[in-house]
Length: 120
Length: 252
Image 1 (tube, each protein chain N blue to C red):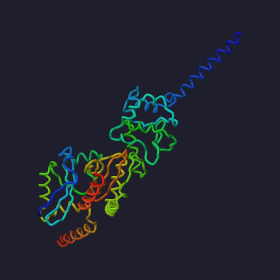
Image 2 (image 1 turned 135 degrees about the vertical axis):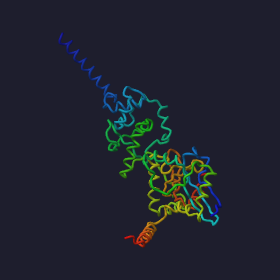
Image 3 (image 1 turned 90 degrees about the horizontal axis):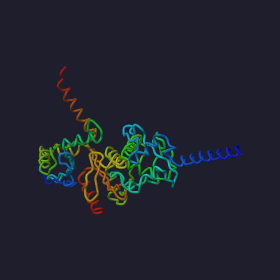
Image 4 (image 1 turned 90 degrees about the vertical axis):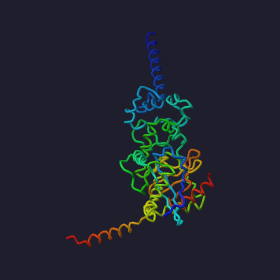
């Protein structure tokens, strides 16, 4: 799906280290739908773990991972996530809003598919 | 005659002892336990007991001073020292709601059992001394985990001043995960962590946004030594954009 507009709630000029940060990105697609995704760098993951004194990142909405936080790189990454009817972009955006029922349904479907093979 | 002179000498010696004792009593350095003296020395920026490892093993101690009275330890700190506080927390001058800093003479627990001391000198020195301040932050973090309030920074919510912002905050709070993280971000700001969650972003002219991975967003600014919570929202772009637009008009 085509991207209509990419914008940033916090201007990129405030980023101190483009290799070590994360930020929100607003994405508007040609059909008028809007999404917010979090784009971050690998180094920033270590920074966050160090800052929180943890050996892993806290659970939460996934990041789109980029080498550095420049408009060009972010646009390329967002473009990659808008393929296949923006499936992954939508997943990133809605990841925090998916109800547990949905997982139960997916689990049931998976179990049914598995049982249908009747291996035993 | 000899007896008379003996009595005079005894009276003189007694007077001398009494005088020395009074002098020592007025100086807390001679009337405090070792931890208090250590703290005094460290606050002075010197002293023989400046071993940070030794100090870090002790709970920070405060020297209890009667209201309006300065101890000799305090006199060694000039007014310039009082102004130059830690840059990160320097804007903090008093506990909110008229609460006092927990007194802790002689070390031990930070529990605020004794809050009779009106003097805020100790509070300023806690901020001024990185080690003591760090220990107090740790204490507050522990208290926070126990759901006990321990304020480091005064928080004031301005959300209620705008019904639209109230609506966005309420809407965000409908999601339990987001509500939990909105509370968590605010709590971290209260504890002096200005970059909680996935980090804080500057939106415009002093207005910042604290973010959590659940999608919780807390908009705030520092003003007059306090942190003002300006708005709360989720990460829905329409909500975020609308909130930022309102904030830009009000505070930009």
